[in-house]
Length: 451
Ligand SMILES: Cc1ncc(COP(=O)(O)O)c(C=O)c1O
View 1: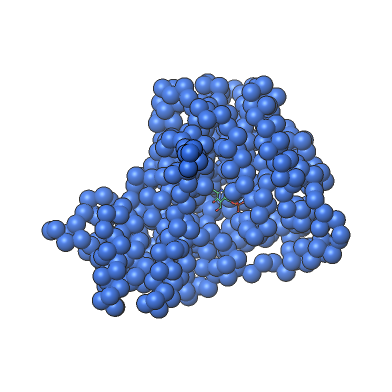
View 2 (view 1 turned 90 degrees about the horizontal axis):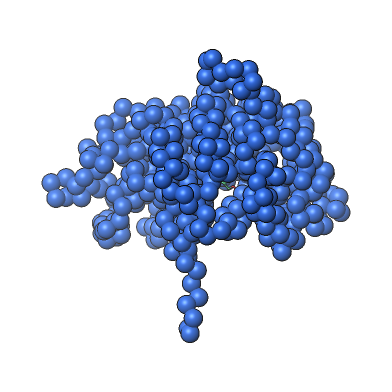
């Protein structure tokens, strides 16, 4: 072509969670039944949708207006409902002992104007990063949910800038690393955090959130907080919404119906914008997100219209609590299956729907010149895996052998903008016996692989 038509960020669009699927499918000719532990879809993994939620959706689907476009920003009544929910979040006590009462931070107040709907957070993330000035960088976690890290990398055309989450410290962010990277790189205009986190299952204590806010204020940055899993916190962990700690700094929280209703097929998520008018550049940027959405007319109407009826229903708090308790039990099972195996570290998830395990790099090294493998029934499949694992990242090699040996499909941690070798699996298999069998098989495979 007379012009290079490729976007400079095109090579940065990686989504290992789904890319692994095509590899798993290539094993079909060996008739390996695949157990999908890669994707975070509770419904696909057998969780029934609560009948009362289905009733609400059915009722809404019977109304003609559910088939109409909604306002570009989202259905007004729903945005007002959500704004009221934000405004009801309580004031948090001051953090460290000795903090004077005047340091009490009032939660950010929003109106319906500050809520903006998208076709799922995938769409929100594409807009949030796609309409950011190319030179303005957002520092994000590593490991990171790849939609976020890829979108940031693609918008800039460079590798995603990251701060470290530390598996030896319950996957907490290394706040010194955050501050140094912000201080010495003035291209950083924003900080991204995911709380509760995908892929690590970490939940950040309020004090960590306050530190993020302090850094943002000190260096005049905005904060993006992905709160997809805000209502999936367990094991007595305490955290807060960004709105409760942000004070007067500019920020955006991202929320979604996908995991908590759960209704991932609704493609319905929203941004809560805080302190939009605190900075003219932030204000103009938020306006550009809305203008971008306007070109698409609006986001999916029906799920938006269901939100007030679902979330204000007296059964909703119980629904959330039951699910959180269910994931707490599964997190314990996942943890027990891998804990204590030499050569691998697992941190018990405290929130979200995943567990991540990290190999000691030394443990993954080849055995006296022979690469590590797992037993595979068919010699031609073994040849295929040997061929496919040549030159791939060490954790991906394990993932391929695991697939061929057990049919279990997990995601290599190297697919989550991470240099730590490991893998992520889900807490979603709804059949108790199958899930336990999967976790046991993963544990046995790790032992064998590293043995
Ligand atoms: C942290 C995080 N953010 C955003 C998303 C995207 O969610 P949605 O279904 O709303 O696009 C996911 C989905 O797994 C996620 O884990």
